[in-house]
Image 1 (cartoon, rainbow, N blue to C red):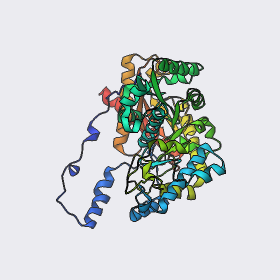
Image 2 (image 1 turned 60 degrees about the vertical axis):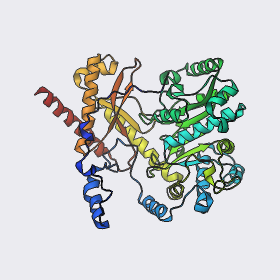
Image 3 (image 1 turned 90 degrees about the vertical axis):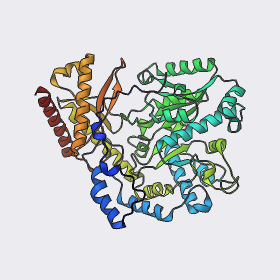
Image 4 (image 1 turned 90 degrees about the horizontal axis):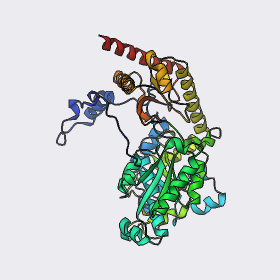
Length: 491
C-alpha cells in the first residue's frame, strides 16, 4: 500500500484568482519606506487571513503573544547564524538548553543524564528546525543512516543502492498508519525511497483488538521477503482530525523488532505539558525520535519546530565536518543538522519556556480542549449538523446534513449521488464562509470503512479568546449560508 491519497478536486478555483496588484514584476521600481508601509497597511493586510480572529477556528496557527514579537525583533537585529559557534556564541548554548528542556518534558531522564549531555559537543539531544516536515525528514534520515551503518554498510560514502546491496536487502521501507501527515510523501522522495516504499497501515485495524497481531504479521512478512524496515511512524494528533495512534503498542512492537520508532507529535505533542491530558500520549516516551511544532499549540511564529532524539548519540550517524566550520570536536551545531545556516529560533522557544512555562501552557491547552468539548456538545444538540466522532484533542470535525439525508448519513447508507451532493454542499458552505471573511472553518475529506470519501468541516480550537457566543455565531452563519444555497438552487 502507498501513502498517496485520493484527492477529490472539488474546490472551486475562483477564490484563488490573483489580484492584478500582485502580478507586476517590480525589481526596478523603488518606493520610499513610508510608501511601502502604506502598501502593507492598506493593500496587503486586507488580502491576508486574520488567523488571530476568535471566529476563525479552521487554522492550526493562532495568535502570537506580544512578547514573542519582541523576541523576533531581537532575532532580526542580532542576526545570529546557528551553523557554528563563531556566528552564534551563547546562542549555541541556549539552543542546546532548549533541546534539553523539551527532551526532559517527553523522556524525563535523570538529572545526571542532562548534566552530561545538554552541553556535550560530541552529541545532541535534537535539532531546532524550520518546520514539521524538516523534523520528520531529520528523524527518518538519521534512522536510515543508523540502520544501514549498524548492518555494516558505509551509507554516507556509498549511498542507498550500494548499501542495500552490500547488506543483502532487496529494498528499504518505512511503516506508519494511514493517519501519517502528507509530508511523509516528501520525506520518502527526498530519501530516494519513493512513496511506494511507505507501508500504510489501516488505522481502523491498527486501533482494533487485532492491531498488534496485524502489525506484527506485516513486519514478519517484510523481513521474510528481505526488506529493510527503517522505521515505524506513529502520529500523536493528526492534523486532519487530531487523532492519536496506539503509541504504546507500536512502541512495544518496534522495540521487539529493533525498528526505529518515530512519533510525529507536531500538533499533539504539546499536550505533554498537561498532567491531566498527557496520558493521551502514553507511549511517546518510548519513541526514538519526536517531531514537535512550536507554531501550533505553543503559540510561536511560523517556522519554529523541533526534532528530539531519545539517544544523544544518534547524531553521530550523520555528522558532517569541514575545515572552516562544523569542525570535528567543535561545539558547532551545523555538523548535525540538515540545514546549514539557521536563524536563532531557539531564542523564541527559550523565551516561551521562561515566560509562559509549564503552568501557563497547561492552562491554555486544557482550556482549548474544554472548548472543543463544548463545541462537540453544541454540534450534537443541533439537528442541522452531524459530528464525525468524539475528539481526541482539540480538533472537531462535523458537517451540515439536510433533514432528508440525516438518517442515511448517520447510518452511512448514502448513495453515491447523495454523498456527492452532501460533499458539494459542505464545500460550498466552507468556501462561502471563507469568502465572507466574518468567520472561518476549514474542511477535509476522510474515507468511510468502505473507502468512499466524505467532506467534513474542520474546526481547530487554538484561540483562547474564542467564546461560546462566537461559536453560536459561526454555526448561525453556516445555517444562513445553506439556507441561501437552497434558495439559489430552487430558483
